[in-house]
Image (cartoon, rainbow, N blue to C red; front, side, top):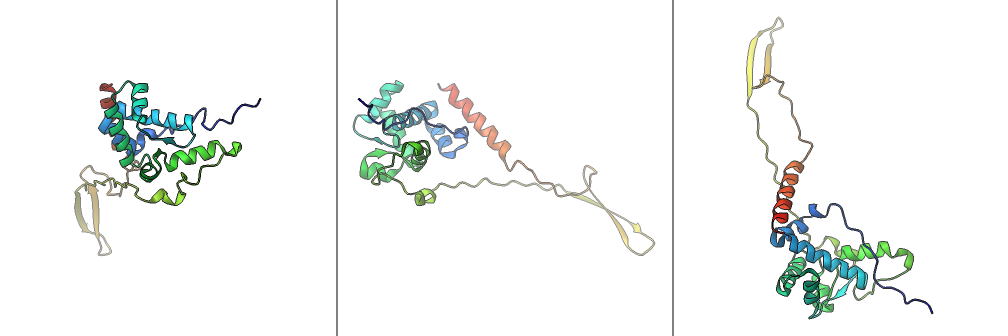
Length: 201
């Protein structure tokens, strides 16, 4: 007798830049390690059970709370916050009572290409929704100018004045650009957040 076709996946890829994602940073900021554990536990359940979604019923938060040893109310709040952050699709939850997202469905499609498994059209999130409702935060640019000291020298032989421009440090006044585009500040903030999160665990 043939084995029944498995709907879920045995594994799923996890992005190495997970903690650079602003949505994850916001989840970490609000719920600390517990928030990340809840989110990852939900992803594991989604990929394990159905592959690209999981029914969100009255027992769902209880089941996750048992797995993680947390109280059910915390799990429920964190799930709703994940929806606010658009880590899960709000419309699918409201109209179909399932948790899924465009990113989850993209990963599922990529992994299951060779299996020929298709996503249920009633649950499929079109790629055209990818740019709707995206939270965009701008990184402020802080620039300070170094005062120049200008020294005039007497006219040279052809009637022009020689102008010697130098900075207060004696170097030529050249435009310098930072190549890190604020990455150093972001790295420091991420390290600080990670340190805070691990202290609370």
